Structure formats: structure tokens, C-alpha cells
Image (tube, rainbow, N blue to C red; front, side):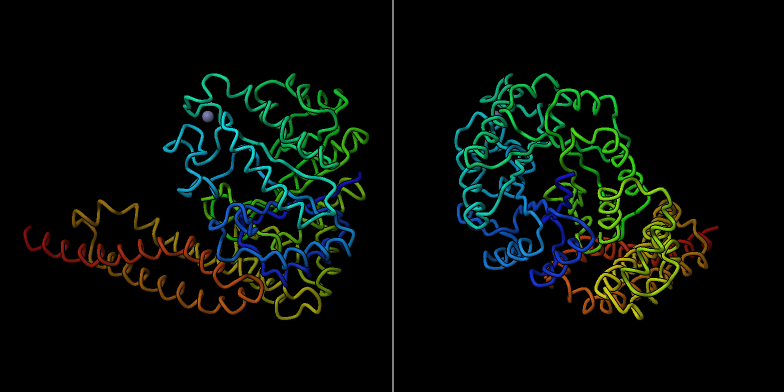
Length: 469
Ligand SMILES: [Zn+2]
């Protein structure tokens, strides 16, 4: 297989630009030879000035990153969304007029009846190619376009406009002498025959992150199109820190079997790591935390489906970190039972002679999961008792016990986060870490505080009830 890629989704909590260079070395050593970089609001586009995230990298930092990729023979493949997933632009007043459905319409996708949405996209492409002139492959995204946004300009023609726009964007990329790649799902959902309307040579990247639709894959292979597969190697949309690894390994295994079945149809594969579900949803997975799954993917793409997963995990841990520990327990308990993973990941963080950075990041995110479990246990149990508390039906001993738990949660979480900050900001910009902590904890801590007031009042209500009886 020609392209063995990992997705670097910069919607995520991105690492510092310096630290990211070491991750390129790591991916190259694992056997990955391409990075699909989704820039979003982390690239300082001149044509969209004013929309950049405070932690966006500078052009110099991106240039260094591209040089590092070149040095390690990693193909840098830019991804610039051409239809939807555009909240990062369209949420700003100055781009409102481009929204599908008009200024009060969708901030998710732009109107395809407007020429300006095409010209702005082309200008952004040009800027990327100016900074990365060695680019050979360019991904134009185009997944998950919504057909049901009411829009006077699009009328009933949105699917037609969509197909024409994708074809036009792909042709623009090809006019620069590059290979154009698209996500396949809109065609898959709305009519496979429409693939024929794309310019010749467009690569269709089939993404399937759960069970694979093997009939569809077989049909696509029979069409003679150039195909890439895409697995999901890291994502955890229920807002924990370390994601479950098991379903990700199963998805990579399933894709490994597809690639064994159709060796000639698939010229590439991308293991995706989703930094957020949408531009405006909370942080999800990030690149450095995914270094186990990138190794799992690289092994599958280079040497075929992994048959003995437990041995792979043990060997990976020993080789990667240079110390023998119970990696199977640690990897399998991440996310589900962070308390069981904790002693092993702590030992790893203290002892690993190699890749201490990854050990520290895993330790930090596993610790976040433990703090969240503490809060969830307290808040959800109190949630269930809301009516009991507000009607004064909870005995004083009960409310006092929960009040203690509310206090304890607050203290554990506050102290835990203070302890984690210097560790995590070695690898992530401080503002990114603060954003992550805000998203995970701020509202929950305020809810915890709300229960303090409620439980204090509930104690008094219980006393009043007893008096009145
Ligand atoms: Zn429209």
C-alpha cells in the first residue's frame, strides 16, 4: 500500500509546535508514511484574518513541521473542508453571508449557489500550497453535507450543486498537478452512480468506523476507482480523556481484512483521530495520546491483520517504553476503569527510559478520567435524589453524608487539576490545556456547588418536617 496515513486533526487540543516535531519522528519509526493534516482554525490564513485560535501555529512553525515531515519521508497531505464542517469560519459575522440558508442559516456549511464560497476556498488552498509547495496530494473533505437546510438560493438542487461543487474543487486541485481526495459518504448515501460525475483520478476515501459495509466496499472496488480506506483509531465522543482502545483495534482489524481482500483497489489508508466531533463541540482525542493506536495501525498496514492482540500490546509496550509492565491491563482499562490503569501508568511515567512524554500524557489523561468519575458518581447520585431533597424527605444523616462527598469532590478535583497542569503544559500550550479543563470541569464543578446549597437546604427541610409531624 502506497499511503499509510495518520490524521492530524488540528480541531483537537494540539501539541506545541516544537513537541509535534518529535511525534513526526515517532510516526516515521512506527512505519507511517503520511500525515493528513486538517488545519481548521489553527492555520494563520491571511484571507480569513481574525478567525484564528489563540494557539494557532505560525507559518514558520508549520514550515518547520513540513521540513520535518520531508526529512522523515512523511507525505504531508493538507485537508481543507470544501462544503461543510465550516463552523470555524461561518460562526463569525464577516462570513455570515456565505452561510447556507442566508445570514441566519446554517453555520455548518456554506451555500453552494454562491460563487464566493468557491473563490474563498480556492484562495485558502492557494495559501496552503504556497507554504507547502512540495504537496502532491490534497484532501478536499466534502463529507456529511446536509441536504435539508432550507435555502432559497439552493432550492431543490442541493445534491446537484453538491456534486458539481465537489467536481469543481477536485478539478481545481488537479489543475495544480496534484491528486485530489474526497470523503465518500455523501455519494454513498445519495447515489453511488454520481461518482461517475467526478473528474477522472479523484481518490474516494471510504470511511467506516464501526461495522464495515462489505457489499458497498466490494462494489466500489469493482468500479475501478482509486480508493483509500479510513478507520477511526481514536475518538471518545462522550467527553472523557483517554478513549477506549478495544473498538478502535477491531475497526483497524476489519479494515486490514478489506485491504487483504482488495490489494489493488486501495492505494492508501488513513487512521483518523478525531479532535472534536464538530468545530464547536468539546475536545476529543489528540495526536500524542494516540501513539499506541498509530503503532497498531502501522503494524496492520505494513504486515497484515494482527492475530495475537495481547502479544502485540505487550511487545509494543516493552519496545516503545523500554520497560516490562502489564500493558494489557493498562490499555484495556483506559477509559472504562481508570482506577485499574492508574498504578501501571504511574509506574510507567516514573520508570520508562524511553518515550516518557507519552507515558506522562497517558498518566495525565487517565488522571482526568479518574477525577471525572469522582464527579459523575457524586452528581449523578444526587441528581436521582433531587425530588427527595427538595421535598424535605431525605434524612439529615443522608444529606450530611452527601454534603461531605460534594466537598470532597471539589477538593479532589481542584487539587488534581493543579497537580496536572505543569505536566500537561510541557506538551500542550497552556491556553489549550485551560480550554480542555474548562470544557470538562467548569460546568460540572458549578453543578457540584449547586448541590452544596441544595443539600444544606434539604437538611433544614427535614428538620421542619419532623417538627410539624
Ligand atoms: Zn444554499
